Length: 390
Ligand code: SF4
Ligand code: SF4
Image (cartoon, rainbow, N blue to C red; front, top):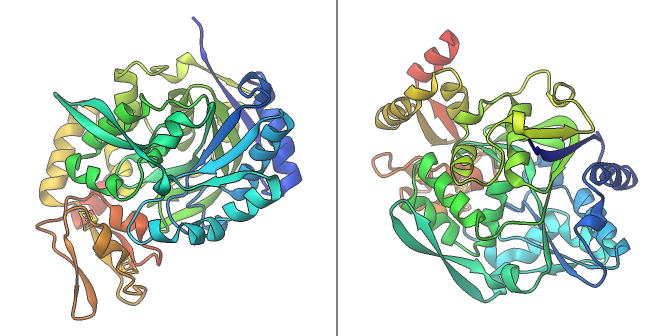
């Protein structure tokens, strides 16, 4: 059986020289960068730039890795570009600030890469199958038309809704503007959202995926409510699903509990299990942290058999085992959550942010996008009890 190769290399620092060396060693396990990049080509590096958070918060792909990739591309005689569309209201108009805060501006200047603003790109509508319907998804046309190769550079992170966010989900950022949030309304459950992510991914498959796991995120990821964790490695693979399977295995999550992986396997996008993956460079056991905290939804589903997951997820939604809550002391009234909630369930009432739980669809966009760690998940007593028993 031909296995899907995933390279791993240990690296516990963002010191630029060390990251550059680690990147070379990492890519050597899958044929080197020259196997993907030819002289004269235009190469898009697609980091995870979820929101304007500094690199040490682990919300975004670290600029030291982006810089190392851009420099390596230049050494191949090709031209590096860096682009992503962030999530949330208010960021799109301040893309320069996003680039500055996340370190992308400095990474581009130091490596000679060009920053690409997806929001200014022409939009191309892709028709995708979603359930029994065909729907149109807008994508930044430049991603499809202007580059010879796309290198996808996700961050090793948990996700409150989809449990993990890895290589497949990172390509959601090719959808410009606030459309991303509107799609949460169309696909409110983690299973339907995952189907949508996979259907989009299948139209924009990158040629190479490199995951930033030097400092990853555990707990209530993927935004500022998550907790940075020293994971100490880089991963790379041609096949995004193989990379996401390795990520979930490192986190200690059953693949059947990660809906993006379930949907991608169903769509035939790569390996079905870890047995179909060849991990090169480092043993899986050596990559696993001593302890890794899953998001609340993940820690619940991990404890129950697969056949009960749909029922438990349904009940969890009905009785609301998890709710977003605002910490008034931390809240800066920036309005990002108010303007980003896909169902308009958040209001600014007499100077305080309030959530209408009757409207809330538990997409957790507000937690993902709150810049002040003021929005977090409140677990119900029942969920806390279930976690203790487990
Ligand atoms: S909860 Fe967060 S996103 Fe919402 S207004 Fe307060 S600081 Fe802004
Ligand atoms: S309140 Fe938060 S979790 Fe609920 S629908 Fe709005 S953004 Fe999503």
